[in-house]
Amino acid sequence: MPAGVPEFADVVVVGGGSCGSVLAARLSEDPHRSVVLVESGPGHRLPAELPQELRDAGVLPVGPDSRWVWPYAVELAHGRPGWIARGRILGGSGAVNGGYFVRAAVDDFDTWPASWSYEQVLPYYRAIETDSDFAGPWHGSTGPIPVRREPRSDWHPISAAFVDAARAAGHAEDPDKNAPGAHGVGPVPLNIRDGVRVGPATAYLLPHLGRPNLTVRADTTVTRIVFEGNRVTGIEVVNGERAHTIRASTVVVTAGAIATPHLLMLSGIGDAGHLSELGIPVVADLPLVGAQFTDHPEVVLSYRYRRPVDRTARTRRTPALQVTLDDDGIEMRPYTAAFGDLIPGSGIGKPCLGVVLTRPRSRGEIRLVSADPRDAPRVSYRYLEASEDRVMMREAVSHAADLLHARPLNGLIDPEPITLSNDWLRARLGTSLHLSGSCRIGVGADDSVVDERCRVHGIDGLFVVDTSIFPAVPSRGPHATAIMVAERAGCFL
Ligand SMILES: Cc1cc2nc3c(=O)[nH]c(=O)nc-3n(C[C@H](O)[C@H](O)[C@H](O)COP(=O)(O)OP(=O)(O)OC[C@H]3O[C@@H](n4cnc5c(N)ncnc54)[C@H](O)[C@@H]3O)c2cc1C
Image (cartoon, rainbow, N blue to C red; front, side):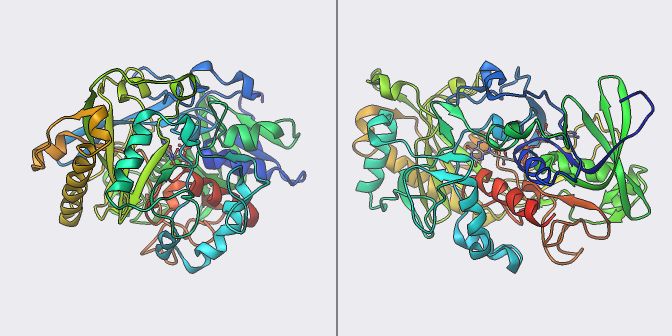
């Protein structure tokens, strides 16, 4: 495109992550619709061109030196700083994540508008997957994402011992976490094939890059959405030193649960008082932009192995998680490697069991620190602020410690002592990186940012379709639900 000439598309998709990859692929199925997908990170055209560091699903390439992430300094709890990362590459966070690909629970949809009930979304969950372990009415057999669970013969010794300890403690066996009502301990569904993540870019987008009506602009960052009155007219982008405009009658924001509210606020959509303080002209006063997000707080219980673990060739290369225990609002994750190995450069050394609140009550907030798009927003998780969360986390940690000290785990590992004081919990507090709900879906502008069709209230032509629209974080990992949402939105957009 010559300098100074605005580019035009029928639809611009902002962010080529998990949801953006699916949407760009689905929307460009209509050859009469031109689609431009703008991704801030690097792109690739073939799965084989994926950088080697991103191929091994047993490693999460999101450490401090990673070239594939947006890093954010955050506040996990009052006075407790933290550091998080989101994917910044074609495929987004889905290209760097743990490969744990599980659906939300049926009752997670109780907080969604009625048109997003479990019955309504089930066909889309089925459409995205090919499940190689289970068939029948709950599972898909023709979708682009392969789903499988690791057989016990491939489990790391810690996975096997954890399942046995949890079963001995009375937890139900849970062979199929994607079945309605599933709970207990068992293998997690994974979107990993031959040790490589099969994320949305690989499964949905790359096969269609040859479409003449689909353009991917990688290494290009959207800095502002542009409006005439209350109608969207395009976006402003920067690529290196070069800034230009892409005009479009429809803009779909899929920049993820931090960057989406950040971009909306920079563009004048958000809490009018907050925007005015920073001198940003208000286009739509939507106080819930960036407000009341949820994510899964995670406390890690460290241990050391009593002796080197006996690993066969089949159990040597494992995903980060092979099994989990899900019960009563708690998830326990026996990671198969120390975080220092899972996230190179993270410096978090020891092997550990993650203990997670899956239905947290505490709500976080994302706020601008300035009107300059280069300044990252302030992300305050406010974890464990609700007293119910603190009570529940204490009980969960206490039960997890009992499991670690029980047979057969106690023959394998020597857990570090726990104290359950507030300080002890805060010191071991982390996040599951499942941030959701920062631009929630709903009915009216006072309780949501987008309506049931993902349209931003009060603005023509502007949609949000990513994890920010979830009313709350699902009680499991959000990735499968993100792709389901994009599949469904692709049908009605
Ligand atoms: C390290 C890690 C591990 C995880 N593990 C799991 C797991 O095992 N299971 C699970 O269920 N979930 C997991 N998650 C969460 C899950 O991957 C995300 O919830 C999901 O991928 C989010 O999808 P999204 O489309 O909302 O955003 P993303 O996939 O993050 O996509 C957003 C995209 O927008 C781009 N972008 C942002 N701003 C701009 C801009 N201004 N201009 C242009 N492009 C922009 C970004 O570069 C990115 O590519 C993990 C997340 C992380 C970070």
